[in-house]
Amino acid sequence: MVIKRATQIGNPIIRQKSRPALLSSKKTKTVIKNLIDSMRYHGLVGMAAPQIGISQRVFVSEIRKTKMRNPKDLDPLRIFINPKIKRLSAKKVFGYEGCGSVAYAQLFGNVKRSQSVTVEAFNENREKFILSASGLLARIIQHENDHLEGKVFLDRSPGIKSLKSSGEYVRPKKA
Ligand SMILES: [Zn+2]
Image (tube, rainbow, N blue to C red):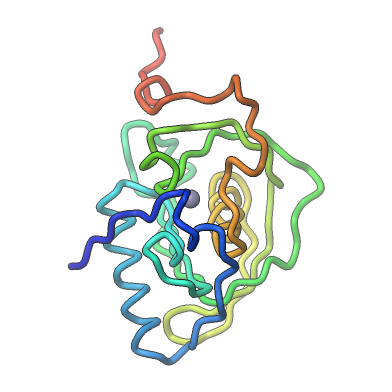
């Protein structure tokens, strides 16, 4: 298992547009494996190749069960190679986001994004698929796809006053 430290904002690779990935290359396979291991290790719901220092259009997602998470949001491991966003809903919704590359996911902000998204990509078996998603998964897909364009959630103008440190964001609500 190879755990990669998340590349942080300030590192130029986070601001670069990533290059297309070669579907059948050994390097792509290694990137995918390292992304999955690193995402799980850091407790993230998604991770994109630039976040482990690789300029390649690849990201992974997985919404695992935690005490905090709504069971309806859970989603299996997904791999997106050379994704293309085909449709973004006009309807937008706010939701809190953090990022492994922004203060090691210790900072959260309220970000407006399309409520649903349709994405076309290749999986690890080089098969093309089209996925329509809404809710948390739609948010993750947009967030991770942004990484491939050199963007982070802070660029989406979360209100400065919405920002929360992780300790406050995950604090259990009082009954
Ligand atoms: Zn991120």
